[in-house]
Amino acid sequence: MSHVTYAVVEHDGGWAYKVGDVYSETFATQKAAHAAAARAAREQRTPGQGGPIEYEDSSGRWHEEEERGDDRPGTEVKD
Image (cartoon, rainbow, N blue to C red; front, side, top):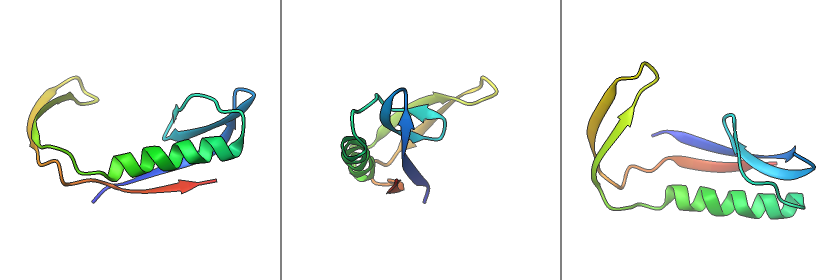
């Protein structure tokens, strides 16, 4: 199972959460950014409906897979 960490950080004159190198929108307070990160983490763990997906890998090759919809990552929020 994969794992996603939402890090709450100072960003662009306020606070944001980020996953890897990708930032969320900016929030006025750390508390608001943390709440948004917790909401995103909760949604990431929620099972969905399965079905076919297509994606491009880093070398530019396209792949097709069947997504089960219940194989969700573990998540956490770090301040």
